[in-house]
Amino acid sequence: MITCELNRVGSDDLIVVSGGTKPHIGAVVIASYEENEVKVISYGFPHHKEEGLFIELAKVWCNTFQQTTVITGGIHIDNATKEQIEELVNETWEKFFHLMADQKVVKV
Image 1 (cartoon, rainbow, N blue to C red):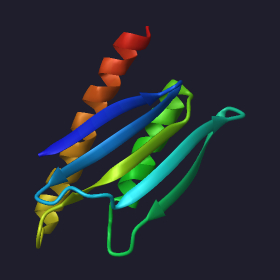
Image 2 (spheres, rainbow, N blue to C red):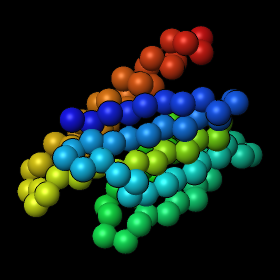
Image 3 (spheres, helix red, strand yellow):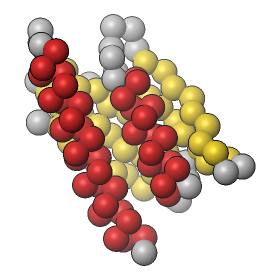
């Protein structure tokens, strides 16, 4: 099961994405909206594969809300198959878009 939790830090957003059997911190991504474009800085810990997904999530959130966004967390299942990984990625996007839709309602 995947969770996406939003914490507001002033006018910035911190989103923690976690799940699987061993939630952890596998990557940290910072996205800022500057001069009508999203700029990203990221770090993925060795042997963790969340960074690419989190970069895409951060870009979408930052571009939509035009504010600084930090996404961190980790998803892990021991010996995950390609199909399990695909399911986790899809579930992450689904939860992320639900969180995003909730925020669009709040910000309107």
